[in-house]
Amino acid sequence: MSKAGEDLIFTGAWFLLFGTVTSAVGVSCKHLVSMDFGRRLFAKGNAIEAFGNSLQAVGREKSYSVEKKENILKIMIGSWIQAAGNSTNTFATNLEIQGLEEEGHKLNAVGSVIQTIGASLEALGASEETGYYAKFEVYGNELIGLGALIDGIGNVALLNDKDILGEQLLMFGSWIQVIGAISIIYALSHIIREEEENHKNEYQYGQYSH
Image (cartoon, rainbow, N blue to C red; front, side):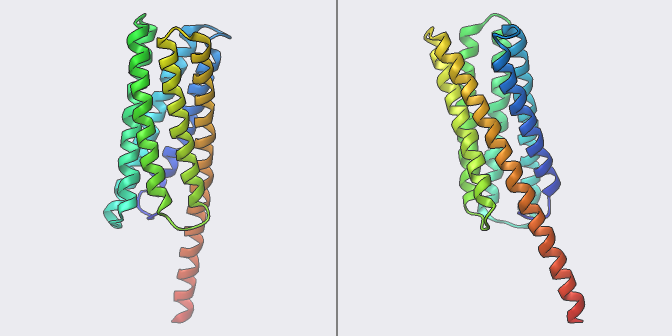
């Protein structure tokens, strides 16, 4: 990871975690509190995720401007695609709140598929990075992609009046994405720390060489 855009990428990852947790709690609260309350939380969570993904995309753009590596470009594009998917989910869930449930379920399924595509592209880009902790970034994006895909299947189940199965899939998929977001933060925190240590060692070596 290039130093340029590092703060944005890491901050975006924290927003991503906060967003996935909010969405997952929203899905879990649908029957514990009220359906509309749960949906509002889910919509807000996806909006936060979209913001986090956008921050990461801008951070990757800054990295790419310094270091023209193809994998950085893949991760950047994947982040923007994920942001588009999250935004679609937010809009779709607001339709559900307004009573347009069928339209909302359909659009939520589409948004989840878009998210899966974006996360898969990010995982592909991260897989080209070297280092031990890069694989945790790959796993994290793969889990987010898997969770989003399960969400999409859950929305298809809801469209086919399989409400219990649909809600269970949505809950399962949402919490898988939380685990994915945690894995990404774990990876980035260690990658950034390693880069700072390497930079510090290079600086010290440069001083001693003189």
